[in-house]
Structures are given as structure tokens and as C-alpha cells.
Length: 173
Image (spheres, rainbow, N blue to C red):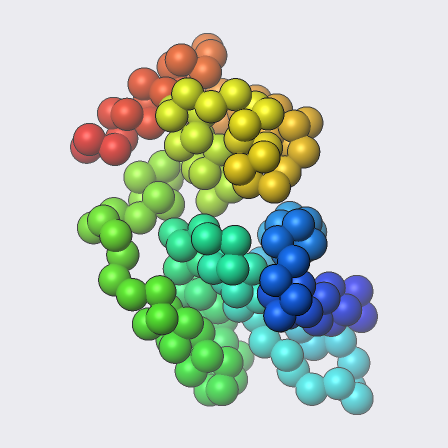
């Protein structure tokens, strides 16, 4: 898993260098691996849960709800691995984010969807085009199209207008 070690290190560098474009790309690369831990070889020390790096990237990109969810996952994973330094780091990151802006996070509002799909659904619900969503989230337009298709399928909805109505209903619930 040297790829994972290199990619998480690159994620840290993108944040230090204030490189949002790279950070967004690395977030997408690491997202499918959020349940893993960075433990490449016997000669390399444990480097924490990938969720911790995803939280850092999400926070840097201004995605507070996603960052909080990743940090909470990292906290649980770090505790399960008996890694107190990483548990402490996750707790501190959660504290730095402050109290949630609403009693229900984006994740709980849009439960059937992944974190990324929830973000896309909220922006679609706000009337954004795929191109506008792609620019806002630093994604390709094709990736947004795939997310919208997945949202429609998961929610059993016929079109974007129905997604907007669904998001509106769930925000007022």
C-alpha cells in the first residue's frame, strides 16, 4: 500500500502549499479508501486512518460537514486501532470545526446518499447546472453527471427537479 502512503503525503503537501486543485483531486482519489489505514510496510510507522486525511482535505476545501463526518470516522477507526495520538488528532480537528451549523448534518439529511452525492444533491437542489456543480466541487463535469445519475437511481426520482423537491423536503423535515 505504498500508493496510499504517497497519496496521503501528497494530500498533506497540497494543504501546506494551499493548492486547492490538487487537494480536490486527491480528495476524489482517496474517497473510495476512507475505511483503510495507512500501514505500508514493516519499516514505516502507522500513519493513521485515511479518513483523517480526507477530513483534512475536506476542511481545507471548505466542506465542513464532510470534514466532520470524516474526522468522526477517523476517531472511531483510531480508537479501534488503539492509536491514541491519531484519536487525539481527530478529536482536536472536530473541536476546531466548532459546533455543527445545524442540529442535523448534511449526512443525516440526505441519508440514502454518499457524502459526495449529498453535496451534489444540495447544489442541484439550489438550481446549479452540472458545470456549476463541477466548478464548485472541483470535479469534472462527467463525474457530476455520474453522481446525478446515481442520486436519481438511489432516490428513485425521474429528474433534477424532483431532486430539488426532495432536498427541499428533507431540509424542512
